[in-house]
Image (cartoon, rainbow, N blue to C red):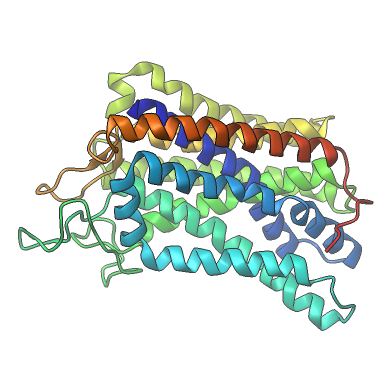
Length: 357
């Protein structure tokens, strides 16, 4: 039952980053490349029509964690308190940026909320990547200092950064040079995904330019990927053990590499949907490869005193998991029906659709 819930939550998180990921990427493209008002309006609309339904998946993931792995939920939401509050504010400012920009015709008003949408999207992509970096790096569970735990074994607290700014510190912060690199990979990946979404859903005048941008960003992503794999072995020497012990897990990195290689041919693709599928493979492959490298660990411990948090020592009782299953099925059905209806109503190009603020 623990494995079932682990896989279910992984799927929901992957869907969230695919769907809301293009919203983040759209904001990044809007911030740096949209110059004309007609492009700004249609690009903002390509995110604005979908952002609220996409974020339902994040709420669903949080609810599922609470139901199935309450100890992990309590540990992470308290330990990452500072960055979670920052993420909450960024989500708020991104949303009101989209909703407020067209309320008045004054250029200064539009510029303010365009900046809110773009900067918040950029920082959200960065912080979600940093969060993944923290998970694969591990945290100081129990707050161990001088061989003594200051908290219970499954709790921790991280400052935003510590003075060493190093992932090898005994008391690392949320932000260090390793998590920043993972954050940059997230920014580049979601910018590519957002650019593919804009090409797929709009007739923006910058669509042809975006294919060149995707190609260039893909070069950067390939370099960052290789670099991150090399330094990951320094941060966590056992990071590839699961792939050697369970060779079938190599399927997940293959998914990522397929998307990465495929995007080098973006300028020759005739159908817009092909680019979006390839950037989706990037996201799915990246998330699943990271989870596969850790399984069954949910959050590694960087000290030797307290055990890592796993799907087994953080799960609720068998009765709780079975009750959660019944409600989870109902929630999944409603979620998928909602998503299917919305995508059918908003299929095709959205240039002439009414935002309906």
